[in-house]
Image 1 (cartoon, rainbow, N blue to C red):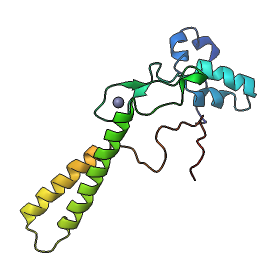
Image 2: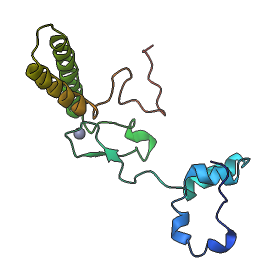
Image 3: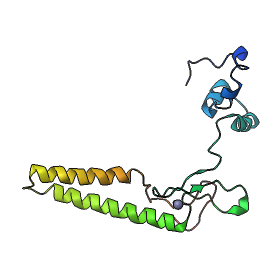
Image 4: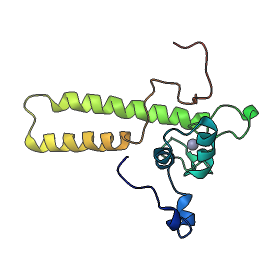
Length: 152
Ligand SMILES: [Zn+2]
């Protein structure tokens, strides 16, 4: 993001509240060689993460998951509960299996155009729903601050 001028000093007073919405990227572009203490300061100046956390990754759940405030509060969670994680995985796996099955059927010879359209629609709906689900190649509840042993 070079080529844009940083905010001129005389504009800063007028834009005091805008300053709080500057991204870390913008701040670091203005001071690319900032020492670590300054970079840590920038973290307090840049756009914060959502204070109340983010929605549980079970697409049908409205609960929020917050980053643990203290060390003893356990690892950061992507799902509000074990139930939500299990439901997420179950629904995702079912949808993936349905898409696979339907695509095999779709490829059969002798399907009419009308049938093909219905199958395409059913496949499309499931892919549309699946866009809300996350993959399982990693342990979904393990955050970057936590190293979980035993898995390779
Ligand atoms: Zn949930």
